[in-house]
Image (tube, rainbow, N blue to C red):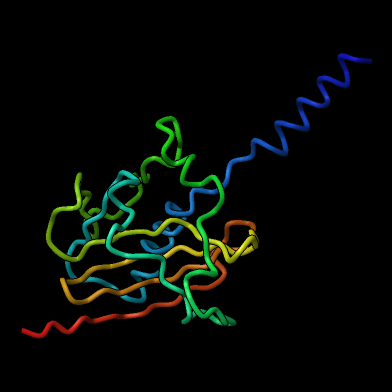
Length: 177
């Protein structure tokens, strides 16, 4: 009886506590490559980066997805990175260390090893949730078309890791000399 309880405990523990969270950056990139670019094509090859420390933007904070439906947030303080996600990503054995580009259209994308290169470039934010609500996950994709033009795609996932909504915002910076 003791062995049966031990086996049952190990099975339940492994089933409920070791389930992997989705690799949201990959899901967001795949959605961008297959759905978004059909609606908003880019004439030049988009530079993309394979490793997580290169495709995460260091110049951008998470932008509030206020162009999505039913959004009432006022600022970024209401969003936070999924608990434990960053720690898991910094693990060298993590499956979330690099993006899989095996199915990309090489006419549309160019894989770069570092953040150098011409425009356009694509960066992906860490996945965020609203407060402690795990039912909705948000990822931003930043398409830098030039030093002054950025198009942000806000992608919203449900608890089953399916895209339920997305929107696009264009930002241009005016540089005065």
